[in-house]
Image 1 (cartoon, rainbow, N blue to C red):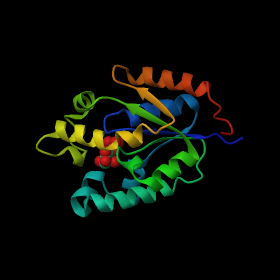
Image 2 (cartoon, protein in one colour; image 1 turned 90 degrees about the vertical axis):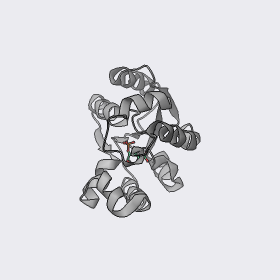
Image 3 (cartoon, protein in one colour; image 1 turned 90 degrees about the horizontal axis):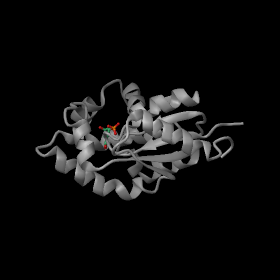
Image 4 (cartoon, protein in one colour; image 1 turned 30 degrees about the vertical axis):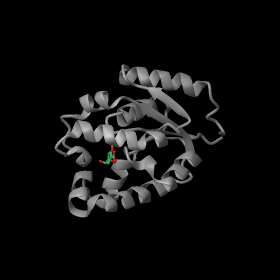
Length: 175
Ligand code: S3P
């Protein structure tokens, strides 16, 4: 019986990679990070892709990486913060698994990523305002996930525990 994937969505700083890795380990699933797939395919870091080729090209590479996941089973997938904005990506994610929005406020997200230099979209004069703007723009799509977890005051371990409980209540077996 094939195991449906778990697809983690949400903003930069939502904890998708940390939660994803731990969840995959607990479930015995493979862990996939779409940003890492993009970097592998492009042969360079996300930051360099943005610098050299711009965001539009990055979004194309992101769509190619997501399309390569069609038909996947038994994976926990951490998606880039903007990946759920493209309709074609949402179709792929919804077809392969259970979508989970890791939710947090702009204030909390900013606190978690303010010292990070690897995220080009927040290299702006006012990163806090940019996070709030992106969140407002994207929230509608994020909220369409099947499961929404408010991670505001939770540790990675607590989010993972919560998700394990949530998944136990659902049939992941043959979806
Ligand atoms: C982006 C988020 C990043 C990465 C890229 C763009 C976004 O991924 O895909 O920098 O548009 O929010 P994380 O959400 O893993 O930081």
